[in-house]
Image 1 (cartoon, rainbow, N blue to C red):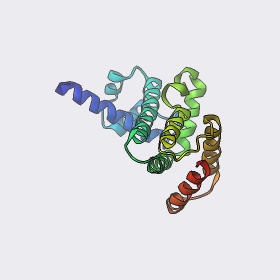
Image 2: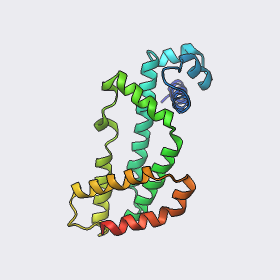
Image 3: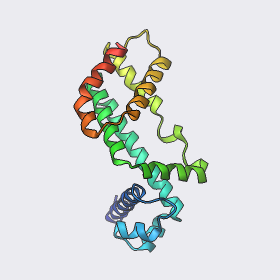
Image 4: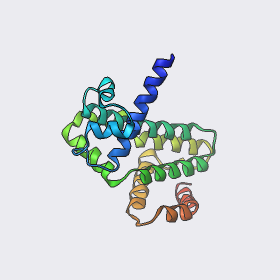
Length: 191
C-alpha cells in the first residue's frame, strides 16, 4: 500500500471512529454530515469523497464497528488460551463493548434498521451462535464441556445466562468484582 492509500485508509478510519462516537451521543436523525466532519476534523467535502451520503456513512460505520467486534471475538476464540480463559476474556471484552455503547447507540441501530431492512443481516457480520459453538467445541476438546450436552441446549443456556446478566442492575465494578465467580458458576454448569 502506497502512502496515498495509507493516508486515505487512516482518514476513513478517523471518519468511522468519529461517526461511531457521535452515534453514541446523538440521535441519528439529528446527526448531520457537517457534525461528523467537524468531529473527524475533516472538510465536509471529504466525507462525500468516501461516502455517497449520510446513510451510506452511518451504515458503513455500524457494520465496520460490528465487524471489528466479531474479528476480536474470533481472535480470542482462536487464541491458544484455555477454554476457561477464553471464556473469561470473551466475557470481559463483551462487557467492555456494552459499556462503550450507549442506549442511544442501540436506538440508532434500530432506527437505521427500521428505515433500511437490508442494511442489517445478522448472519453476515454477527452470528453469536456460531461463535459460541466454536467456543464450546474448544471446551469439548479440553474435556471442559460435557459431551452429553448438545449444541442446542448449550446455546439455550448461553442465551438464558446472557439475558439474565443484562437484566441485573450492576455497575461495571460489580461485574468485575464477581466476574471470576460468575465464570466458575457457568463452567460448573456445563461440565
